[in-house]
Length: 184
Image (cartoon, rainbow, N blue to C red):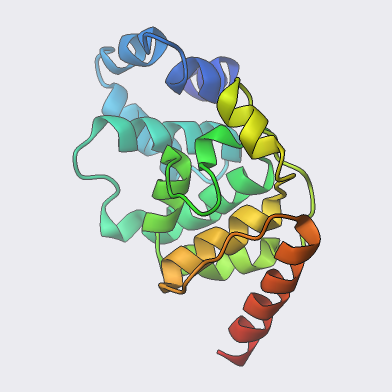
């Protein structure tokens, strides 16, 4: 792992993006050559998903036009991997509302992301919100990785999405989505 990759994973999403002042992110961005270094890191498939995901999130945050269309196919599996390993739901938003930065970015990657997200429709691992009001509300739904995957697929494909209150009710909708995807 490179020094930059190690540094990014040590800082993590929370310190880079969710601190009150974004000081760590701004300090990093002011370093000479950082934009190029982050672009190289994102493309280096020998580096772990977390560092590459954080590098992509920084570029998405700091550059007005990111990513280039030529890189969406490279980023799609990276973002799906980040969702698969999600520990904090806040960055993905709330199913039913496309309000998390990482969730908006994943959705913007389009069909190449939708195909990979379909692989997460069986992933029942819980993803929790941190904080106060958002955490209380979001955690009351007991969201799982597959709930986020289904929501993002609906958005990418332009399908209507109805938020169901309980995991069993959402599982019925996820089964319908999975069947629809299989039919093409």
